[in-house]
Length: 188
Image (cartoon, rainbow, N blue to C red; front, side):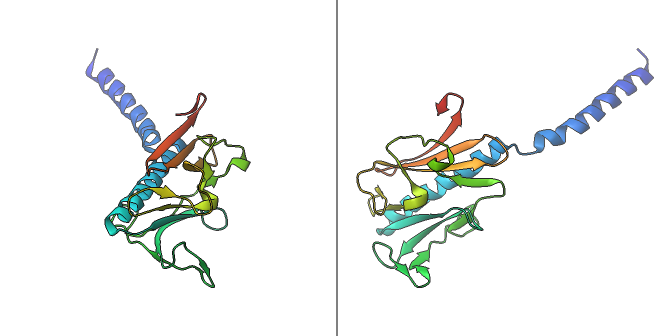
C-alpha cells in the first residue's frame, strides 16, 4: 500500500465520521421524554422533601393543555388550597436546582401531558390522574390528593407527539415517586 492510498482511506473514514457524528449527538424523542419525566419526578421528590423540612404542606399542581403544559410546586396560603379571584392563593417555592431556580416548569415543545381518555392506560389501574387532582405532601412526607382519599397511587403521563415514546411518573401514598417506561411489554 502506498502513502497516497493510505491518505485516501483515512480521508474517507474522516468524511464518513464527520457526517455520522452529528446524528449521534442529536437527542432522540426517547431521550427527551426520559429526561423530562426524570426532571418531573425529581421536582415532585424535592417538593416532598421540602414539606418534611419546612414542616408544612406542599402541593404540586399540573396545568395541562392550553398554552402551557406545565407544573408548579407551591405552599398554599389556605389548607386545603381554595380558589380565589386570581386563581389559587399560593406562594411559589423557589427551588435552587436545575429547573432554573423556579418552582414551575413548562414541558418542552412536542411533549404533552396525557390522560387515560387519550388512549394511554396508566401504570396502575387503581391510580388517579394527577392532572385532575394534583398532589400534596404533608409534613411527614405522605402524599395526598385533594378530593380523593381511597386511592393509593397518583400518576402523570408524558408523551412525545412525534413518536410512541411515553413515560409515567407515579406517586404512592407513602410518598414514593417512580418513573415508568411504556414499551411493547407494558409499563416497566
